[in-house]
Length: 259
Image (spheres, one colour):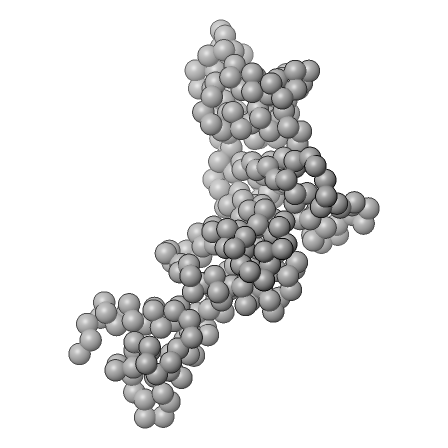
């Protein structure tokens, strides 16, 4: 008799290893095959497992599904699932590497923007699941003797990314009630800088200028306020640090500090 652990492993492998044949169906010796072959029985479970995992990917990547079409999205997901099995029972954790998979998937390799759109969607997904912000203590900030000693803390829901593609516009054009006057060009020579964060139950996506992105990126990397200012003003010497700081504290993007 097959041990339980081996039985469970064989079941998972049959569900997620791709096309089943009489020769590669690992559960063949442990199933009643009087009416249906082992391959046929396990194909039922395999189809159900693939469909459930694909549905999870569809929830995380709705814009990618819309861009390539539902049928082709399902084909891509099947290929992805076979190569990248879930490692957690929580399907919210599954799909982080989908963007890099798309970059190598032959049939969509010419759609160079898909990888970054998928990265944006994954970051949006993660931001929506992150912990809530802590309360920013303005009174304690006013008591700090020197701003040079401050290291600001970012919201757990914050995610920042840059792209050579207008992924913000591509994402917006595939939302419900999107404005009709969005102009899109894939031939631009400027980068796109994006900030994602959650306010209450709503996740926000905001396109920012390069200097503000550099400021937040420096804080994200653990640098103190002085270093963050230097990073931002290296990009734009005329940027207003006071305005930038006030803006991101009020948005809840900067949610605390240490000295």
